[in-house]
Structures are given as structure tokens and as C-alpha cells.
Length: 213
Image 1 (spheres, rainbow, N blue to C red):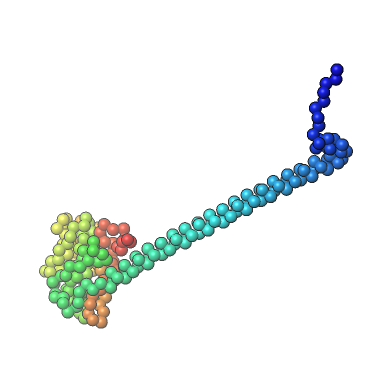
Image 2: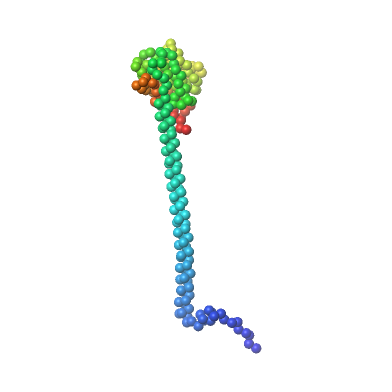
């Protein structure tokens, strides 16, 4: 008794009737269609990835622009603050009396100083008689507050007894300090108002005389 044969599918039956060359052509066509479909799929994914990269590059550029704008704003705020401080009126020439110092702050509220009319022209002096000067009163040795002695026109430290000559630009007379006293450079406007515009030497305790916010 012969075993029953399983029925052939119509597609298989049709392919079996083709010649070998026809079968090769058919298989090649199918492979080409698969490759074309794969190529289209990969192209679509690559385009999506490229779009994502373009978006990422755009976001990076936006962040760079924002960072640059923030820095520029910070610099502008710094310079505007510095300009505003430099325009502060420390005193008026007519209000100063010889050897009667006026306490000031420059370039900010944490930097105490002193404005003095010495009574005779000195280097760096301003005003009609060239005798008005200003100095930091933080001793460059350890930051003790100095006091003015009119007898010899000096600023003296109560901590370790350093002394500085106000008539010679804050030059140290003697003591343990290793630097001269920072002098504030002054300008006088047409109304006689006195403004500090810069600092010579480094104020005690700072890496820079003007601190950025």
C-alpha cells in the first residue's frame, strides 16, 4: 500500500514548474526587493538620526549663545558697577580741612579708606593746592585698621606698629609690612566733588581690588 502524499501549495507548485534560470531570476528579484526595502528603512532611520543631530547641534548653539550672553551681561554689570562706584562723590574740596581726615570706602563698602587734606602739594595730590590724597586704611601686613597721625602725616598700625608716609604715596616708614599702603587715585570735577577712580597696589585680603558680583 502506497503512502499518501501531502498536497503541494499552489506557490510551490508554480515555482517547481519554472526552469532553473527563471527561479534564479525570481529569487534575485525578491532579494532586490528586500534590499530596496531595507535601504529605504535605513535611509529613513539615518534621516531621523540626522534630524536629531541637527536639533542637538541647534540646542548646543543656543546654549553657547546663552552662556556668552550671560558672560557678557556679567561683564557689563561688573563694568557698570565699577563705573558707578568710580562716580561716587567722596567729598567736596571746600568741605575738607587740613589734617582732618574723612572716612570713605572704595572700591566697595568692604574696603575702608581715608581722605586727607595734607596742607601742602604732594605726589598724587588733587584739588586746587594738590594736597588731597586718599589711602586704604587696611594695613598690608595683617589688615589692622590704621589711624592718622597729623604730627608727621602718617598712617599707623596698632597691631604691629607699621607706619606709612601719606606725603610719599603711602610709602612704608618702618614696621613689619612688606608692601606700601595702597593709594586711591582721585579726580576732582568742575563742581569740586572728589571721586576715586583707581587703586595703586593691592588692597589687603584681595586677589583683585574690584570684586565681581
